[in-house]
Length: 485
Image 1: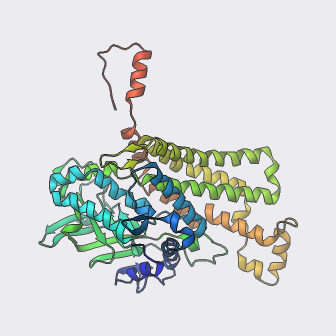
Image 2 (image 1 turned 45 degrees about the vertical axis):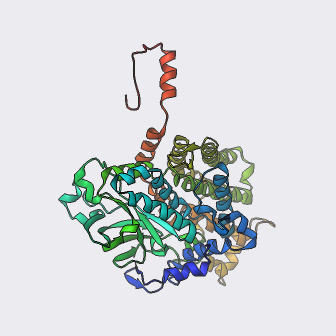
Image 3 (image 1 turned 180 degrees about the vertical axis):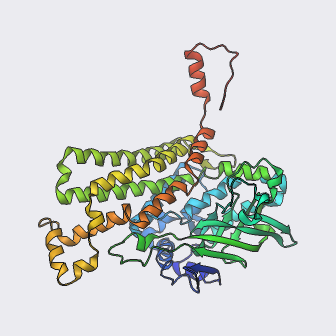
């Protein structure tokens, strides 16, 4: 059943161990670093219950309303419905959030595509994934994923150093498996559960099998400890940092200190082939909402740059229009990849409709690799005032305020308050500590750039280009080729 925002908040009060700035957090829903983003997620839950948004954000199955974001896609409409849902949510919250569930539940669908691989280990494991996909759909939990480990000295195998540098199974019990280690994860302190999966690796050596584990971990389970990075929310007024104070998605080093994973929550363990499969297919669905978010980031850069140019009258200059056109090409390039990936969608092994893989992955490479360039274009368009403008307190104060209102008033239409607001927004989007954090996150959230390129290489159908050149160059029929040939 669809949950309310308060039901979501109540679920977080489960005694979970969360640390921020060296202090144990007693209630994550009220902590200054966590409350703003929890309120955003709670708002998303409440929206699905409101008559105005209900038909866009939910669907009916077996007489019950369920979230459109958790629905496994089987037809094109499922994807267009998800796009409409995301647009509705982001327009309402007036910003962009990445880790809210829809971009991680797709990893479960990837596991369903590998059901036969899981069944090789134990048919129970294959059944577990079916049940958990249904549970996420039916209970509307906030589901995230736990990805990268600390890893330690990467020149050494995990067995040659502290074994906890990568999550591993320490023993079996009648109740389940016991795991130790740690993962970095965005949103874990305020999520219900996480899909814990193996980190990147060759996964061809049986000696690594203790580290080849995939399971569901409840974020409030005994032995789970969330050690958060310092938050951006609350460090400066919201008028000065409107994005950081509302949309900071807090990451944590999630420590698993002898955590029991019940057998019903285990998808695989001690099975390197399963680990290899899930790492190779993990993002076949989840890359779509991830890249879609970057299109909205592009919209924010276009909007901030164009409002600034219109305020100052520079929008009439050809050079300025060309730079804004660069931003538009970036935005529409993302849009084109996403649109084409759905128009050319492919049927998955489990019968789901997955975005065209090489088109989607190429779009991810484009969106992520060009983001730093486009941020600098937007920074140039916004000008140097985004780094020198005083904070709102100076505009409000007697003495300094009169002078600031004088010099920041542009004309009858653009008074100092609106001028200050667009500069503060652009600063937080492009120049602040929060902006730098978000840029780094975008570059690594779904793996480093070389893994993005590997995904393109592994998903692209090379038979067309090879056959075309075979004919054009009049190659002998005896010539054979393929990826890496």
